[in-house]
Amino acid sequence: MRINDIEYIEVAVFDVRSSSQAMEAFSMILVDKANLTHYVPIIIGLNEARAILGELHGRLPQRPLTHALFVDLITNNIPDYNIEFVSINEFSQGIYYASIVIQTPTESFFEVDARPSDAVAIALCAGVPIYFNKVLFEEQMQIATKTPDYQEEVPFTGESGRVRPSTPTENIQSEWENLSVPELKELLQNAVEEENYELAAKIQEEIDRRKT
Image (tube, rainbow, N blue to C red; front, side, top):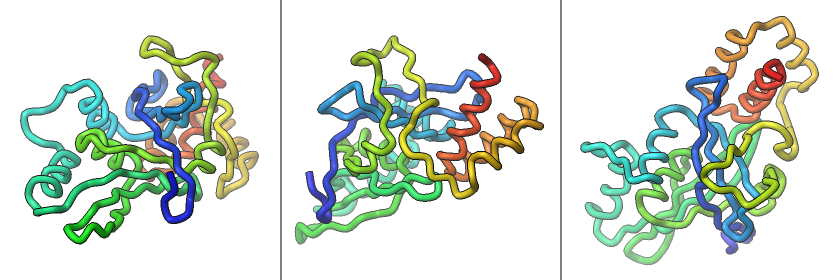
């Protein structure tokens, strides 16, 4: 699919996995629907993980969460407006950027800027496709050794495509050598809250390295 002359692929949410080292960090695993061994992990926060897992497994609260409220507002309360799809478009300085695409009564479209976790939760709730910039997906993707199932542990650290940190990785990691694991976990949580997903992934790698 082409959006604004950019090629996109359709992806699906394979799962949301918690980190065994950091209670508040989760990995949203997006797989290429045309090749289920190709996936991109995106680190998200606790509340976003709960929202996505609730939609995936039908465990919905009695009262609507924010993403469900948004879907209800657009689809049921504003005449002739519809959520068409969501897309993950860019990756800059460790942050992914996504959009929610809405159709108007005149059949024109407009985009709402969103975090990937919110966009995905909205897509699952609304039952609309999730698209991922193809070039970006190929830059960031990991390859599973076999077609994954829900029993297989899919890692979200390791080789994750091109790394473009805003600060040289070597300098950052040299500073981490003097930090304890609890201090690294605190840094990880701060990176997740600031949506600096690339830095969060590198911190997680350092934590994992010390566990081996």
